[in-house]
Every structure is written in structure tokens, then in C-alpha cells.
Length: 179
Length: 434
Image (cartoon, rainbow over all chains, first blue to last red; front, side, top):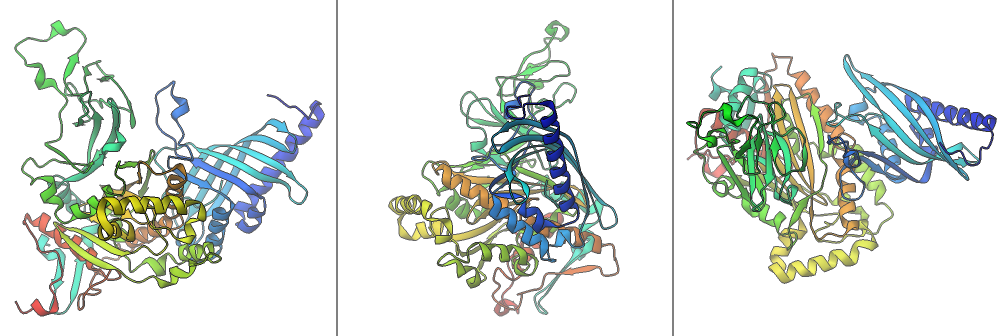
């Protein structure tokens, strides 16, 4: 781990604590379906990418995830399309979320990997539980790699998010939330 | 209930209905396996997925595990994915490149032609047995049309182009998008829906549901293009033409309102792509003439090839298959097709469009999945025994009618009854007396 500018253990701990709190607050916005407020946490130039995971041979880990340019991903988004999804969720006629799901984001294993000026690279794991209607249950488990950027208004903005969902064939019929 | 009673097709009253047990009964699914998936040509994959010798892809087709591989001689071969020795899967990865296939159970090793190369302790086998008996087994029939590979478990089926009938013209239009050919983008969308496979087939060929169900998608697109000159075209959407192609295949044709990356530029596609798209169009005109270029580049096609392949050739081009695993469970797979010589910019634009509408993370497909699962739940109310597909029977049907689905169901019934050459089009009012 390289912590360049947080040069004392104390500062590092405070930074990690601040980042954790930001990620927990973000998760609460999603669970409480405050999607527009969640959108405020996204940087204008965000890249939000969830590749598809392949089943590969040991030793070929570099081939595991689809890329953004020539391969298909689950999500490969900028702010404009993400906010389009937010508007869709907010309409009340987006049928797979009407009636809406009970969603809980559990965010764990938060690690600040590096600091570069105003930007921090953060790794975290997630467990997302979604339950809907009588017995529709979905679990999404995976890891995220974020670039968070300091922001005077919201504390931090998400400038980049890579989401690795631990599934090959999607075990849910739809993605009903953000990660 | 007798099989022929499962469908009411009454051109006098203009009524078309099917009994909902077709969507719920394990017996019907078993019959479909025997008489449709075991007897038709079923889509396997595209030649571009295995470009180099040794490239392979693994699939489930017609309920069988299979894989296909590019041989050293450049030919594509397809094998049932089971070791002739004791049955284990010989190909255990979805994709890759290899010199040989080795079964991990007893290390029997096969070359790319499927021949048994070696096995441990060869002396343990008598020379009276011909080694070729132990070759990997291909499906009974394998063929391709312009790079689209199909297999059939019916040794007596007609040649592939005869089976494809009028669909060949539309596969030609797609294959002719580029003189150097088209390719399948790497990666595929795979997910499971808890509905009968025929509900997904219906959904994919049903334009009647677009505006009511996908209102939020159209709102999204309208918002996206509101500041762009010409963006108002979404409002100009009109139903297109349905063409019945024979053998249960059917296509819907409509004008490409928001442009096509092949090759009709539109302001919503951005100035940065204008020059490239116009150059592609010029080249197509040189190769094919103005009229055919309009067919290739100017119209959207939604092509259905019976029993379970869709090719939606819109702003993007996608392939989709729906594979039943239970009466109420279907595996869905989607691939994106791009011209091999598209720039990175245009390829990315196609992929963006692909994932924006389609798939479990898209703005469209989740509404579809919810709708078909909802139908499957509704079928539990068995007293309401019939579903209705009569829309447009009394007139020249458009894409906004239910003719496409009637075509599918007429062919479906023909297959189940073992009939050849079933007429799948509506009988027009004038011909009703005859």
C-alpha cells in the first residue's frame, strides 16, 4: 500500500474513516431510493463500468473481464445515461421496480489504496440483497474499485467506479439497483 | 387435450387463440424438444467467433452441450461436448484457443478434427476396435449461411438455405453491411428469465407493446435527443411492414428513424461520426447500387428465424436466442454484431446502444422480463384458458399487429403435428371463401 500524502498513521486513519462514512451514506441513499441525491455524488466525467466476468483458465486472469471498447459489459456508462436510468426509476412506471424491491447494500472491506492530490483510490466489497413481491430474491456480491475526488459541496464525488460482480451468467433477471 | 386443439385459428371470425397449457405443461415442452428442437435447424454461432485455428466456443444448443472449433485447415467443426469414453465434458471452458482437447477424467486426447490422438496405456485396448469409433461425435447436420452456423439433430432435414427460405435475403443484407464481413463482439449477455421460452419469442416480435410497456425508454430517448436538430423523429414512429418468409420465419421492416451506423447518418449520432458513416454509405453504393444500399442501410429489420433466433438490425445489430430449460424457465443469450472494418468509435457507439436498451441492465429489457414473468404467473388462473393474438386479422397486418406471432404459432403447431409446409401467413379476407 502506498499512502503518499497522508503521512502519518493518524491522518490515514481519519481519511479511511471519512471514506467509509461516505460509502455508507451513499449506500443508504440507494437503499432509501433517493436516486436523484445519489446522482449528485457522481462526477460529471464519471466512468461507471461493470464488465462481464469470463470463466478462464488459471493463469489467464488478465482475460477474465470484458473491456469497454470492443466487448460487451453489463454497464459501461457516463453520467448522462446513469441519470437516464435514475429518471426511469423515478417514473413509477418502470415495471420491474413497480412495486419496488427491498434493497440493502452492505459495504465492507473498505481500503484506501492510494492518494493522489484530490483523488483517492478506494477498494470495497459489496453484498446487495434485493427482495421483491412474495419471493423474488436476488443477491449481488462483488468488489468495487473507485476513484473518489474531493468536492467542496458533497465531500467526495465518484469519478470512476469499476464493479466486479462475482457472477458469469447473471443469476438475476434484471439489475434493480446501482452498485 | 389433443395437440391440434391447442390453437384456434378462425379466419372467418378473425380470432386467433392458443391454450395456455402450451406455456405451462412439461408434456408440451417434451413434445417441443422432440418435434422442434430435435428436428429444425437451430442457431449455433457465427464464424467470426472462432477466427484463428484452435479458437473454440462452448454452447448449449437444442438442449445439448456442444462446442465448435476452427481447425488447422480453416474449417469450422462442431462436436457434442461429451467424451466418447465415459461421458465427461471434453470442453470445459466457454471459449479459448487450443491445440487439442483433453478430457480431464482419463486424459483421452482429441485433435481439432475430433480424432482420438492418444490415451493412457494404449496397450489396454484391443486392436480389433477401430479408433474412429472413439472420435468426438458431430451433430448429425452442420451448415452455415454467410457465416451463421446452424446445427440439426435431424439427419433428414432439408438443406439449410432451403430451410431458411426467405430469411436468406435478410441475412444477406446483414452480411453485406461490410465488404470485409461482420463479426460478433466478444462477450455476451446471458441471463435467465422465469417464463416459458415462447413468451420471450412473442415479446421479441411484438411491436404492439413498445409504447405502452417501454414508455420510460422512449422518454429517455426523447430527452436524450431533445436539443439535437431532427431529434423529434421519435414522434414520427409508424408501424412498418411484416413479411412472412416461410417455415415460420418472419421479418418486420421499418424506416431507420434515428439513423443506422450502417450507413445512414443522423444528427443524434454526433458530428464526429458523420464523415465515416457517409463514406461507408458511398462504398456500399459503389458495391451494391443505390436501391440495395437503401435495403441494407436505410431500413431497420427485426428478423426471426424459427424456432428461437432473433436478429435485430437497428441502430445496432444484435443476435438473441431463447433456450428453454423448463416450462417456466428460459436461458437468454445476446450478442452484438459489428462490421469488421468499423472504427473503434462506431463499434463503441453500437455497443453503447446495445447495452442501453437490451439486457438485464438496459432501459428496455427489464420491462420485458417483468411482463413475461407476469404472464407466466397469470397462467395459474387456469379457468382463463386462452391467450388472444387476433389483432390485425381483419386487415393488412402491420408490425403493430399480432401477425408475427401468429406466423410463429402456426409453424409451431405444424411441427408438433409433424406437418410439412404449413401456410403461416394470414388468409386474406378475399381468400376466406376458398
